[in-house]
Length: 294
Image (cartoon, rainbow, N blue to C red):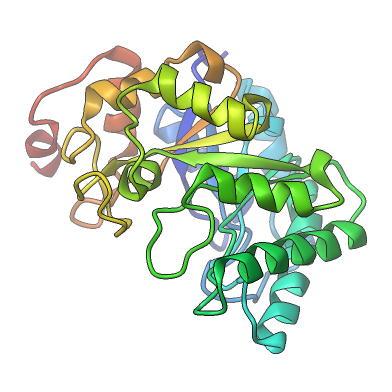
């Protein structure tokens, strides 16, 4: 059986093994959960579910003791519910609706979504537009998948870099019970939050949104100083946040049953996740990247 720490990484879902290959990749890293896209993140093309080897993947998870309800699906980046362009908005609702259906087919319960960018239309417009788009998609799909709105770095006209913005989106939705939040450590730091004080930050989050809405964590170091609003992930211990702070999030009691997902950069085209997951389980290894490159 797998150990109890719920930690994993982004994994691929490529032919020929598709979802079975995703599960195998996650297990090869020593992960107990994982996150994946149900197709390419840059477009809406999706392989039919019957070709995705879902049954084989779910069987392997069951055999290895991996809880399928804790795996995470990430919605494609092309979705922008905050867009003032009607064509973009309608496409975004259509793609999100399809992703809700696909997420449930894999046994997952959480779909992470970037809220969107208002592109000059204004923050309030963007918030209202996102709430409308979420409602249209959730109206169309009656399942138990939660949409987890991701905390954003505040780059450009992104909506969701402040807890208050996410709270307002949730407040304006008629499907509040189906909405949650994904905390991204890099994004929160880049947007200006002091993530080193985890207790204080969670008290603030609880007051504004409610900690019960936290459905997923993205554990990423940052190449930027706090407040840079740039969104550039770094490998664990090689950024401005550092291992010690990130380790607090991984082992924080409040997040015991919440999936922690690494989205750190590949190193020389190789995934670093086995080494990074191991460090969160066993302790930090200084200069681990030098050994990894050998």
